Length: 421
Image (tube, rainbow, N blue to C red):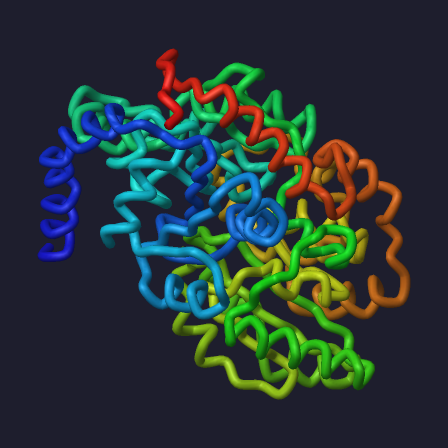
């Protein structure tokens, strides 16, 4: 009860900063200052991370890229590596949030600071080209589809700070662009069709022009996986999406028996939960020789290209893994529960994910053995990949920078001209 009350007070206290949002429209914006943020300011990750690194390493003569975070440890990490970053409530964080001509994020502008964002060109790089209906297409979303006047009143402040039709949104193909016009309730000319910057990490530094910047946790995991591969271990990764039925995992799996199977097959399994998963403590308690639990906050793309086979369920990480064209097992142990209580799909699931399907641990073990011997779903996977991606290379950040630069050069938002110093 106390937690809910605290959350409500925190939510409605935002009314007091509405004048700040209005004031932010009056501040002159500089088209050469770009601010970046991710995951409500909590992580250095996803698409903004890789576009930021590309800009900081290749385009500093043209723009000033600044990372804004709600966490001091992220800012300290970036500063120590020679990158410009500030906490959102620091004087410089406030200054750059007010002066930036471009906001780049992967959820909403609150990844940086919504209340200081008025008048900036906003580019939503989003956080996945998956198959689940999302945002305005998700009929279960009470924020975008309030069912009563009371729900409408209780959620209007949230809608104010969420995505807007005049924001620019990144889609990875023509097919996804059409979907996103509906999902984000926007026109096609506000959809940027380009690859995801995070997927540049799946290619070489020479191809992408990006030197990745790994945290200590990410670097330790990456070195461990590379060491295992030198010992002829295959790397499997289990990356599920979050949902209520994910707890069934422990009813289906006998981890001691599964670990014995992994040992015999010379496979190491890396588990990486969604940051919103409710099973964090349960997975942290897993200690077996051939099972490694990666921290949920680790950026997947710091190690994904070392993975030989992906085990997933309904997660959009599958879409990105298509770029590597490696075997996948769709582990649908909770299929009936999931499909009875979740959003509809844009594409028939078997068409979107033409992979080996498993519902039990025995089927999962059989699948791992088989797909590492012969990947028989390549042709269908490549067809699905063609639908999901316009480009298959490591140059998405380079091309996206130019497209965002063109948007910044126009500096128009909500029909208002923004002054350039």
